[in-house]
Amino acid sequence: MAVKITKITDDNLNECIEIWNSVVMDGNAFPQLETLNMVTGKKFFDEQTYAGAAVETDTNEVAGVYILHPNNIGRCGHICNASYAVKKEKRGLHIGEALVLDCMEKARQFGFKILQFNAVVKSNSAALRLYEKLGFIRLGTIPNGFYNKNGEYEDIIPHYKEL
Image 1 (cartoon, helix red, strand yellow):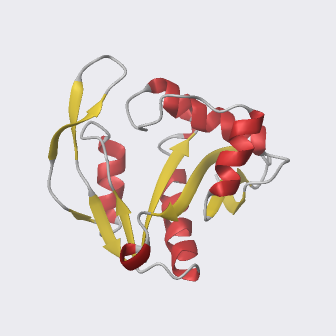
Image 2 (cartoon, rainbow, N blue to C red):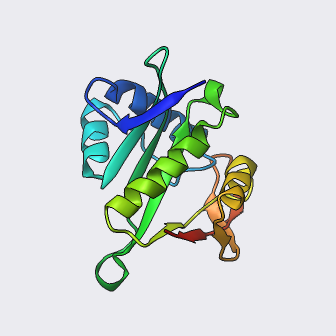
């Protein structure tokens, strides 16, 4: 399946919100507790440095989304952070990889020097494999750093990559 990564627009905002909310509701990867609606979703995506959508070239269906933003301010403002969400039925088709690669390029364009992931959940094996494949460096493990929807705590593994 071929996808093109484009900026999230009003035309695909609802699909992007649905994908994002699906991951939030699963409660095992994103720290957010609240889902987005059309008003909060537009504000959320608009506030990012960049918000991208992986759009299937043959159907124009959104298969995944990402957000890119500074990880910190001032003297650490050159470090960015990102989150990725792929539609459940589209997982395993390399959409996540396309999102990460586009994100790294956009980060460079915005002047960021490092992409850092603060909280990769230990059970997210697909993300861990992808980040290793793309050359991200694991910074260690934070025991019980993520509170899963099932009520259990799980380790997180921060990563970074110089851009």
